[in-house]
Picture 1: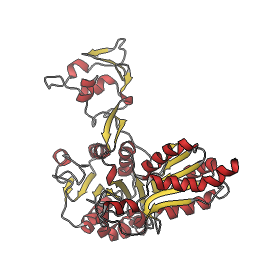
Picture 2: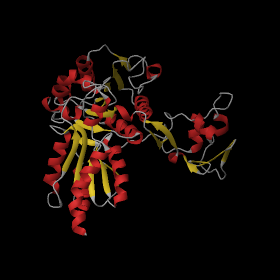
Picture 3: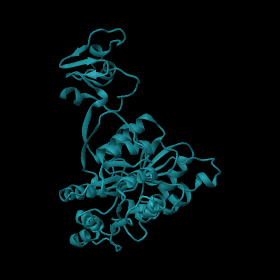
Picture 4: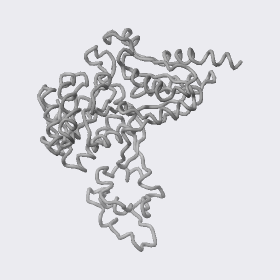
Amino acid sequence: MTDLLLLLLVVNAVAVWPWSAEGFVARNVLRRDGRPAVADARRPSAGRASPLYMGSAVLDGDKVNGKSVKDWTVERTMFQALHMATAEEMERDPTVCLIGEDVGHYGGSYKVSKDLHYRFGNFQVMDTPIVENTFTGMAIGAAATGLRPIVEGMNMGFLLLAYNQIANNAGMMRYTSGGQYDIPVVIRGPGGIGKQLGPEHSQRLEAYLNAVPGLKLVACSTPRNARGLLKAAIRDNNPVVFFEHVLLYNLKEEIPYLPYTQAIDKAELVKEGKDLTVLCYSRQRHVAVEAAKRLEKTGLSLEIIDLISLKPLDVEAIKKSISKTHRCIILEESSKAGGVGADILSCVIENCSDTLADVPTRVGAKDIPTPYNAKLEEATVPSVEDVMAQVMWMMTPHMVAKR
């Protein structure tokens, strides 16, 4: 089974649907001498009464060794999952193209586009000069005329130089043209507070872009949702700004082997709980999970919602969770002054006031430029201890009253 997994190629996995395991292996399996195994595997499945045997592998319908190919998983880091999504969509749709600094021969600043230029060529994977405003505008124009560009910012903070293109063109062209143009462009790249990257490289652009009408804002947080969300974002006919946290690229997880998508407008229930809801996104999902584990020892049960979509918000998921817990903390890496959390807070108050037992609170970064010094930088970012302290502050009066 291990040998078979190593020999399968992802990109052609679902060329025909519905498909059988025989056809799948015929397209994707090689012999040990390097020749295709078509002669051994290409048999009509209709009317076949017995399984097909290939060495140690037993193929029966859509099952290999008794397990459906659709249930197979592989371990991938987040940057590898994003690489898979990009390659799969470029293979599926030749109008998908990648534009940005060092996305081609260098493979991207975090290797999300590694070796794609060999496969798709230098026009579909296009290296650009260091001119963010220009190549972002070029991508938006390409989107308006039928392509589906992916713009990679070497760092999301650099895309502030393209703010005019993102706000005035990507966000507004569909409206200002009276619906004549779709703008199916994805603008993605590394962002968030890393490890001693300094203030200019530690920007949280979600707070800047939240006020721009016409944009969808999506934040991935795991390899599994990164792959599915990016594929769905590429297929969307609206401009999507896709946030990837710089400290999550090497996060590993088992993900489905075959291609899949995930809705970009739906929140993800990370953990069920009964005492308090934590609304979070991106890297703060993992901070919330660790805080919840530690608080379980005190008898407190947190429900964790990874918002995924920052604009529009999944209001129904928020209402459903708060109607159960009646308390809410909003956790973000943006500063509290003008951060996305302020918008989430207003959403909670406007839609959940009749079920809230306490005033919602926020945990966010300090409202200062992110320091380069490691200790000072750590002090500006929300930590597990910050979340635990805020939960205990909210829950202590309730716990005392119960006694």
